[in-house]
Image (cartoon, rainbow, N blue to C red; front, side):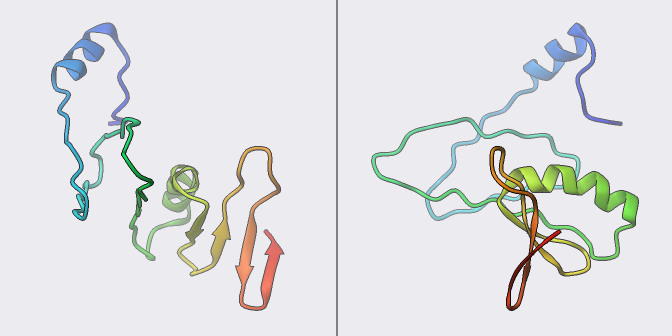
Amino acid sequence: ESGCVTTAAEAAAAAAELKQYRYTMGEAIVFGDGFVHATETGSAPHPVAFLCFTFGAASCTEAQWRAAEAYIKEQGPIYQTPSRELVRAEVKGRGPHEALAAGGSRAR
């Protein structure tokens, strides 16, 4: 199942099931596979860092990785492939993906 809402009835049912969690400074939460979530924008009296980690298995298939990579590269500017290559994700309006090599960077 894709987890996508496709009809008005499904949208209404999903809205009825919405839950809200208030983040607590210094605490972490973890979502399991298949859990659909979003983080609302907010404000704070001072600058804060919001860190997001996505974990996977190095044993995933090429098809599984391609499906996951599209999502993962939207979550942050740097990610690691199953082959342990660090990649700087493309940021809209900036250059192409770059692999972060030990002695510098190279185009991917």
